[in-house]
Length: 210
Image 1 (spheres, rainbow, N blue to C red):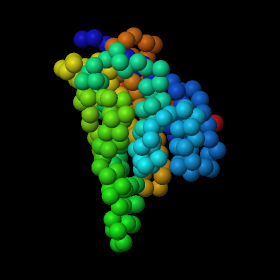
Image 2: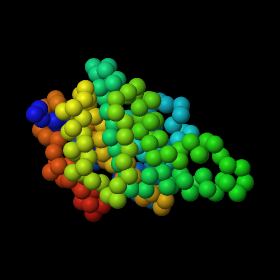
Image 3: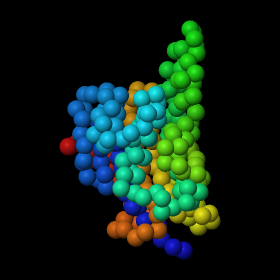
Image 4: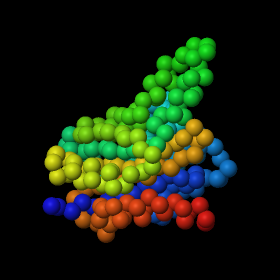
């Protein structure tokens, strides 16, 4: 069995962007997520006209993926060979509640479209022409063992050569954390395994103390 490696790791939490566990970009911790998202979008010079129409959860996942894929030449891969496998615990609840508020008057189609658990991965796929397997799981917490085994099986049993995977959570209280990993067979110092996923995912607890 060929080994897989973590090519890059992105974390967005506490109004901070981390790349490979290094603090890269910080916005005032008292800022709302909406302001943080706009700052990240402008700082990384991302261009996508649909961005401002997205719900907050999709913005979180979209921004994380865009930073993850910066400096990555996706043209080296067939669109069908790129997969995206993600998870969270609250699905699209943040947007569901916003949509519910509109029902008493005129239901908003522009909000309703984001009340689907896989909409965030759909936005990432559309922007980056990803046509491989795309799944979004709802889990009580980030089930690293499950995600590792699922992604590993994709590389073993399908044509997958590159995979975006991880956790994209923004709950009804706007508490958020995005943890995305880019996985491939190209060798790096960080092998794709449960130990390294646990280590990097839980590293946010140290960040909150600094």
